[in-house]
Image (cartoon, rainbow, N blue to C red):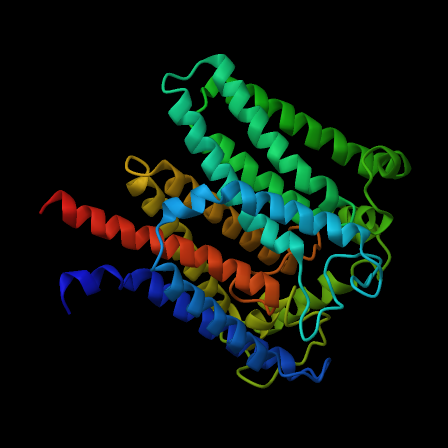
Amino acid sequence: MNKKQSHYIQLDLIVVLLLLMTVSLLAIFNAQQLGQYGENFVLKQVIFFGLGIAVLIGFQFIESIQLEKVSLYLYIAGVILLILLEISPESLAESRNNAKRAFTGLPGFTLQPAELMKLALIIFLASTINKHKQKFETPTTKSDFILIGKIILYTVIPIIFIFQQPDLGTSIVFIFIAGVLILLSGIDWKILSVVAIGSIAALGISLLLVVNLPELAEKTIGIKPYQIERILTWFSPEVQDSNDTYQIDLSMLAVGSGQLTGKGMSNPQVQLPEAHTDFIFSIIGESFGFIGAAGVVFLFFLLLYKLLTLGMQVIERDQFAAYFIFGYMSLILIHTFQNIGMTIGIMPVTGIPLLFISYGGTTVLSTMVGFAIVYLIAVEHSKSKESLFR
C-alpha cells in the first residue's frame, strides 16, 4: 500500500465503526426475538448502514471546505423541512402518540426532518464560528456577545418548530450542541460564566415549575402533560403510578437480569417496548450482561476520545473542520449519555436513540453522514501532515 492509499485508511475510525455496527445488528436481532413487530429490522439496518458507507466513500471525492460553502443552504433546507412537517396534512405526516415528527406518507420510508436538522445545524454553526473568528481576529467583549447571539439565534429557530411536534428530547440535544460549541469557541471565560449561570438558573426555574407548579409550567413553558409526568417520574419514581414507571421498571429489569455475562443470543425474556430503538441498550444488558454493556460504553468512549483529539489536531489548520467535529462529538455525547442514562433510571425517559446502535432510517443515515464528514476531515489531516514534511 503506497502513502496516497494509506491516507484513506483511517484504521481507528474504521475499527470503531465496524464494532458499533456489529453490536447494532446483534442487538436488533435479539430485540426481534420478542416478536413485537414482525419485521426484519436487521435487514433494513444493514441497508441503512450500506447507504451510509456508500456516502462515506463518496465524500472522499470532495473537500470539507465545500460543505462550509453550502452550510447556509443546508440550514435553510432543514428549517423548511421542519415548517413543511408542521403544516403537512395527516396523509403526509401522520401523528403518532400525539406527536408529528416524521413524513410518513412517502413510499417505502419515513423521513424525520429533526434528525437531518441536527447535522445541518452543526455544519452551519461550525461555519458561523469560523467566519466570525476570521472577521474578528482580535476578539472583544462585543464580538464575543455577537457570536453567542448568533449561535443562540440559529439554534432557537429550529427548536421552535421541534418543540411544537412536540419533541422535548431533541430540543435538549440542540441546546446541548450549541452550549458545547459556545464553550469551545474561544469566548472569554468571564462572559461564559455569565451565560452558564444564566442557563443554569433558567433550567432550575423550569424544573421547579414542572415539579411544583406543573399546570403553570404547561402554560408558560409549553411543556406537554406526558412530558411533565416523565420528569416527575424521574424525580420521584416511588410516588408515581406504576403505569408511569412501566418503561423504566422493565428496562432496569432487563439490564439487571443480564448479570455479568448475559443470557446470550436469541434469548431475551423481558418484553420491552421499543426494544429495537429507544431501549436497545437494555437488550444489550440483558443479552450480553455487564461485560457487554461496559464494552459498548467503552466503544463510545473511544469514539469520543478520537473526535476530541482529531478536533484539537486540526483546529490550527481548519477551524471549520474542528468545530464540526466538536459539534458532532457533542451530538454523540448527549445521545449516549441520555439514552443509556434513561435505560438505567438516572435520566428521564425520552425518545432519544443510541446513535450507531438503535434501529432507524433517518437517524442512522444522518449519523453516518456525520461520520463520513469526520472521516473526510481525518483523511485531509493525514494528507496535510505528509505535505508538511515533504
